[in-house]
Length: 291
Image 1 (tube, helix red, strand yellow):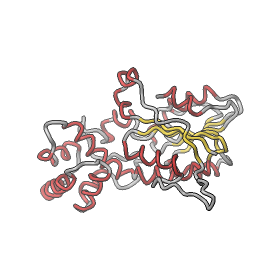
Image 2 (image 1 turned 180 degrees about the vertical axis):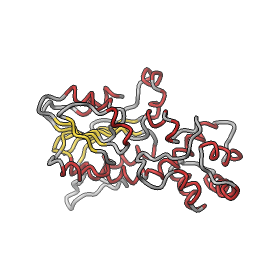
Image 3 (image 1 turned 45 degrees about the vertical axis):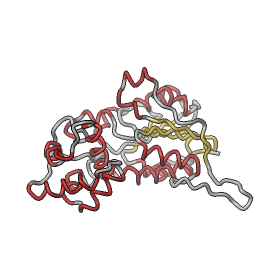
Image 4 (image 1 turned 180 degrees about the horizontal axis):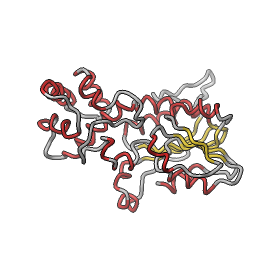
């Protein structure tokens, strides 16, 4: 939904914009095309591999860090407030397609799943060192799997005989609890759960959302595209209430203290886009403006 994201930002030629998930650089290039000579774009990404995609443009500022440091780096670059902040959450197509990164069950590789390859833990640490209760929690909370207890017990049993080091090791370890029907949906949920734990995705998203209220100028736009219900719930709650729990707080006069207002309901991709890019089928785009 590139077009929808760019339109939602309502770009001013001389404005300051932030793309906190630079990835392949598609959104950033589209923003730069809309900016004038005095406009500015800050791009965040913790993955060193995306450096090859950086634009050679004096209006572009590169930040090779996680977007949880949004406020810190805007201050570092003497930017008081941005006119728009864009986040395209989840794993980039490059990371999924690069088998050696270990994000997908479709090719064998060493289990990694780190977006920042300098960070810890990696997927091997999670699967080989976490307790049974910890594993139950991540499969239930991040994978939304009903048989999380059985999955965790199966992993504990398997690693007693052999360390789980590769994707094929992992697939073999959970083979007896992998359903024949809906196999790929199940595997997607299992891999999602491990990846989210490795990268602390919900924790990072929560901090980012709170930082946006201090980082946006009045009238500035927050544009967030999420790919599963856990992310979308946090974004929806935050836009509606100003906190990720969704609790609307009011003052003595009954006025809401929410700093944002939603500009539309969640936008979903068109059938044409889903046909062109099947990975977009679960995407939800939410747009808000700072009051």
